[in-house]
Length: 435
Image 1: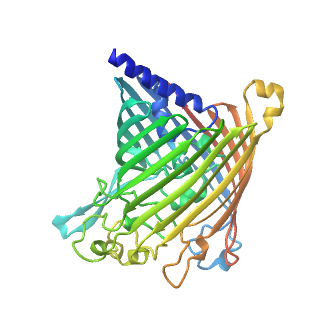
Image 2: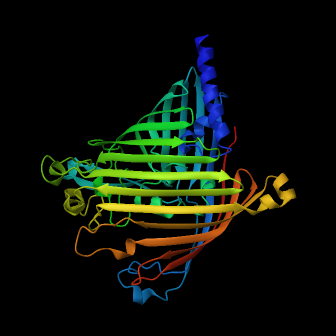
């Protein structure tokens, strides 16, 4: 009887969350769980195939010597940014498993090892023929709709992009650029999560390994903080994230999220003295985002702001000064970063009866965003090219619910010293479950 009651609670939670997807987005971390619906094994995924033509220079000195590259030729590329496989299994009695394996760009995967037998030298080894990331790998115990405990490698749902990162959840060909620049994307780390739903609220609190300040840069802020060149994730320091979403208004989801943790000293080897022992590198990020779907419109928006203490000390950290280490050796890192963006699309097929009946959709959209990973200079020479305004306009065509064809024209607008960066992007993407 107890097992039957538990299963009914789980089924009610999953069906309730599944119904919500018709009106507003649910957290991307729940995608694997939602697909199971008590049927045992499930498999699915998402992927995208992109083409871009960039009408600006790709030369390494295009920002340091902009006048010399003003008339450089355009350049094109084909890319498979993400090809993802979901696997899930419902064991019963409240226990479930989920995993997400992502293949990115088809590049080479490299790993570093520190060889103590050779005087502490860093060695680099090719370990696999493609770049592969394990974005989710967790076991979960569900006690009730409002109480679920998840442990393992999990998505950190800070900001709109991380919580809703599948390609059918944004209009642009590539993931929204502002959040994708200043924060990890998709942000995933090993830790423990407590989450649940109560009424019109969804909430999640996570305990995680800390970020590594030696991976921060002037152009991407904390984006590379979770990455480890080692065969393990260093956890000398810790962090935590919190997210709350509300679904009270039909079709509308409003979310608040944030992160706090220490980042200096979360590296290998750990130092007994020096910068790593003296400073903390506190990282604090706050974000608000929303999604509205109704009246043939989809509107999404977000605003993110971040703070990093002791930013001026990062340039002088031991591993950043060591040219043989696998960590970043770039110049100063900003104490602040921000990203704001909004996009809106209208389904023109909703006005054509035969197409509406066939459930085909054609969204005409526009997007504007502004971001800067180096919003506060920590030295006398600011990196002015990091301040970006970007707009995009295009279409999203859905021949069926699980597939979208995207086309857009976009333009980055930089400060007057630099050249603006227009491009044309085309994509075919899918998201779905096969079993």
